[in-house]
Image (cartoon, one colour):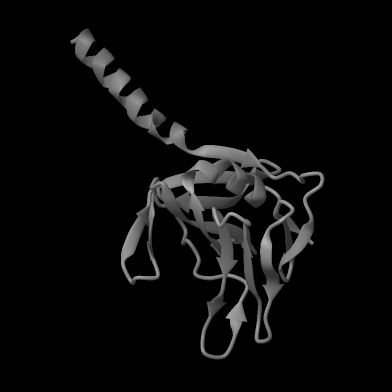
Length: 173
């Protein structure tokens, strides 16, 4: 009986530790990286040499920046027929283990990896991404207390550290 209780306890511990694979980052500035307007109330930093307009738009904001080697593409355009919003759909009240997104071909892919970004010990954002060599990611950022789609990212998985550094520079104006 004692062995059964001990085995049950160990299994419970192992199951609860499954979430430990989610990574956590604190927001910080990076010296030497230019500060860009990201959204109406936010800035972001990207390494020198990234190409693209950054934030622009006439009927609301859009954003596009890519690395010169095309290994990282950062963009958003949350638009309807009349206007573009800074944010897309909200994540909802709970944080799912994965999210489904459509890619340009119309197919859906599962983003099954998560990384958390913190400011003052509170979650500021969650990056969901696939574990494919050519990965797709979607960043949900807390705005007015709600996690909302904030950035789409296409990147080589080998560049995940740079992607995380870029996301970690997002700041309120």
